[in-house]
Length: 434
Image (cartoon, rainbow, N blue to C red; front, side, top):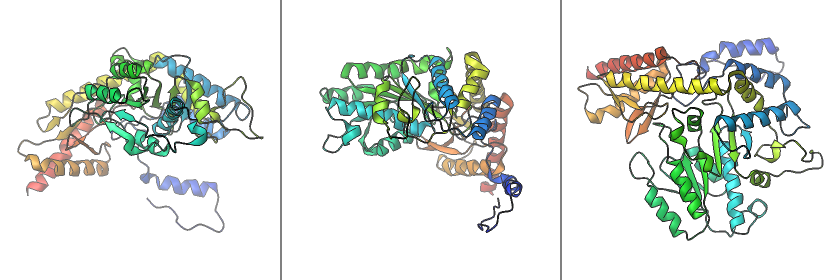
């Protein structure tokens, strides 16, 4: 990839600049393609992609009705339709964000406001100084985006206490119960996880909701991609209880297949968002019959992300998304079977949703060599380019964790993944043996 590094005194026009970008396109990953499995990344549906072009063309400031009627209306409708897709209470407040990190930030900011009120302090006005540490309790599945959000909110990464019963990170519910009981009624935040990143596992959200209700805690659910389990009867049991939480977040640029970047946050008590993110100035519009989304989330300068979300939901509807999720569930099971059938592959986890965790394990390889071998295979896959699937660490092992969320992925794509992993692994294994 080559791009001109010298800042020109006199530019040579738009066509020349764009031509140089096109010539450098080898530096762009095929992240929107059907064989991009390394991260949980969807592509852009035709409707979402076209709407995203319109969004850039219109260049709306989607902060309030006065600054963009179409941006505000699309966001209103998109949030309402997402609640219907996931069977969440209609009265919940919500806002679109850049993705799960800022969605977690948004929802946990509302939780912080609630926590401060339990201590009779307006933390949005006066901060956390002088208050006790905010107790945050979770399983080993808590995602770095949530801990990053806690850091940005002044609650701190180290505030999180993880209750896990094994090296995978599964929740130790009894220990969590004991910790809540020991707080003697002091307010706490529970972070539940709907869709762990290595194997797609879920915390028992319904059981966490029971504890939250028993001890008066705030239950926040990080459902970046796992929230889409609620889009189909075939998987909704995995995310049972999300509707009982105080807040839940998700990513649109994952399973909704909207172009980057796009996420959403829902909070049971919408007034907490208004308190946490209140904004006022003489030149800004006053609240009216339409929501002022700049006062419900961290950004005042807001891209009109609702246009693409509305367009894709309008184009394909509830049934279209249910069918897509169900097709991806079937593809994940198909991939798992192919892994199980291959003598040189080893599946490392069950497949509850859309991620298949496995490693390359040739018959005569020594266990102590497998991590290094799989790292080499992963690096070569990224260079090879036929499929995109690098490595992770799972239960102390180097592994692959392909995630199936792209609307274009097919059986042929996941079968190619298996074939390429085995081909590359065999070639590298043979080289190492020489």
